[in-house]
Image: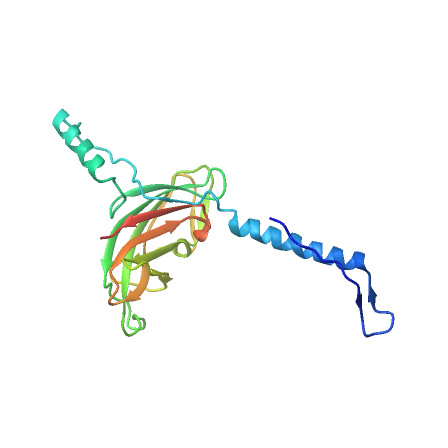
Length: 218
């Protein structure tokens, strides 16, 4: 990235208020450095990726040869993507920061758990039950709601809303998990009644992690 710095002399209207070329250049260079740092920070996620391949599920019985061939053929025909019930392995911004994230259940048109809150007119609630398991070597501390969103089949994205639903207890807004510990709870999204929700996404570090997990809901 290159910045163009033009030098000129500025004379203040106040007596003795002269700014030298050198001072002007230093200010411009400092501004350029700040802009450069912000640009690097904003674009630092050059390795950003969407993870949608689920972890393999443990099978109670070994597949027969015919079953194995059939499954292999199905995978070739349609690449497997994560859906409700599947687990995705995600990484955070720091080394040793990892989660296994599962979309356990989804409730469309979820009902309020109290008499004081409800979706706005023309909207409905989508409730998603997430399970988070700390598979890393560091403690996980975050507000999971900040890293979750849903999208409809038109590409419109919708953020979370704070709401209690009859489906069950909400996910804590201040989750703290030591390695091996897990958390379970519902996260609620408000969407238009006409929207057909297609995917739900989750990322660690309040959504700033480079890896984003995605589950198909349709």
